[in-house]
Length: 219
Image (tube, rainbow, N blue to C red; front, top):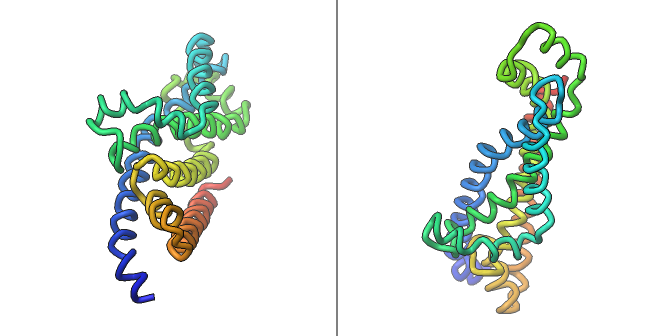
C-alpha cells in the first residue's frame, strides 16, 4: 500500500485537480447558459407568456442534434472550436468547452420539464394581474420550480462527471485519464478499482447533497 501511495498519490492529486477544474468550470458555464435556455424553451411554448414558435423550433433542433451525438464524437468534432476559444484542445482546460456543450442541452431540457410541472392556474393568475414576462419568470416560474431545477442541476453535474471520465480516453486529463493510463494500459487493477470507488463515492455524495438541498424547497 505504501508503494501504491508513493507511486500513484502525486498522480492522483494532479488528476483530481484537473477533474475539479474541468467539472467546476463546465458546471458554472452550464448553469449560466442552460437554465436561461430551459426557461426560453418553456416560455416560447406558452401562449400565455411569450409564444415564439420559430425560437422554440430552432432551439429544439439544436438541442436535439447535440444530444443525439455521442460525447466522445462531439468532443472530437469540437476540437477546432475548442482550440479557437481556449487555445488548446487537450488537458483540463481543453475539456471545458465540449463538456459544457454536451451538458447545456441536458440541463435546458430538464429545466423545461421542471417548469412544465407548474400549475397553469398560477400562470393564468399572473398574466391576468398584468405581470410582465420578466416578473412571471422571477416571481412565479423560478420560485415554483426551484425543487425541480435543483434536481436538474444535480443530475447534470453527475453527467458532467461521467463525461469528464470519458475525456481521459483522448488525453483530456483528470481521474478518467489516470484510470486509463495506469489502470487499463498498465494492467494496474488496484488503481482502476480505487478510481472507480472514488467516482462512485463522489457521485453518491453529490446526489445526497442535491436531494437534501432540493427538499428544502419542496412544496
